[in-house]
Image (cartoon, rainbow, N blue to C red; front, side, top):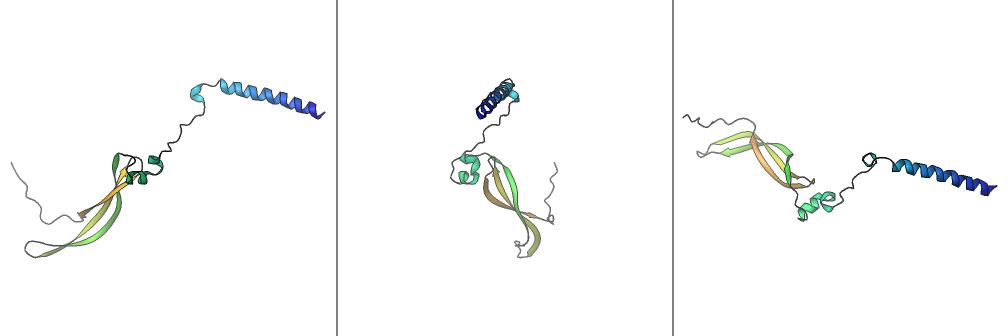
Length: 123
């Protein structure tokens, strides 16, 4: 009795598997589920390490604003007078296409425009 049940189970299971395989085989290739393999290279998995050790040569995409701070700057002119003004120091950082960060650099900008404007030249 058990043998009969097992043989019937194998017969029915074989027909369902073969019909499922035939159905999958008839699907057009562009409709099948396929995902491209993930790039597991060291340049993409460890971008900062690969940039530090010069394993990869990524291309520079641009700069991001890393830090911004308000400061007061006091300057001394040629006559010995001191002038204090508010400024903003912005730190930028390079960003590469694989996600690595590059060197930092700082720029200082005045908050208010200068009191002395350059002369306008007329032709």
